[in-house]
Length: 103
Image 1 (tube, rainbow, N blue to C red):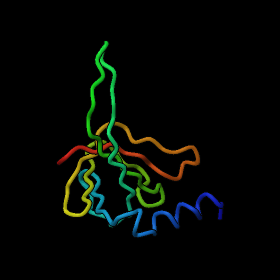
Image 2 (image 1 turned 135 degrees about the horizontal axis):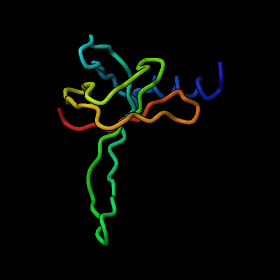
Image 3 (image 1 turned 135 degrees about the vertical axis):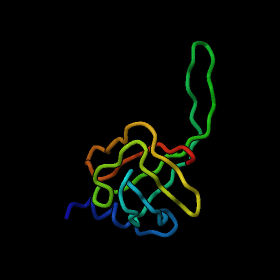
Image 4 (image 1 turned 90 degrees about the vertical axis):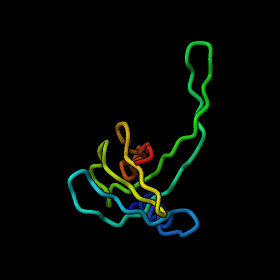
């Protein structure tokens, strides 16, 4: 097993970093997965203005969620979200980063 994959397995297993989540593909059955939440603020340029907004992004393992799509549902600690925009995979193609919006 690659060292990167082993490190990611440890990261997603760590209860201080990752959380249990329920992933439900649109029209599919719910699946229990692990997710690393990244609720960072985002600054977007719009002309001369800079707009600040809260974002909700999470990382999901490709091994658990092979094809996340916009509109799929994620529930984390009782909060429900929908994937918005196209998910992006990391360079090693092991982790998806998805943007979420409240469901």
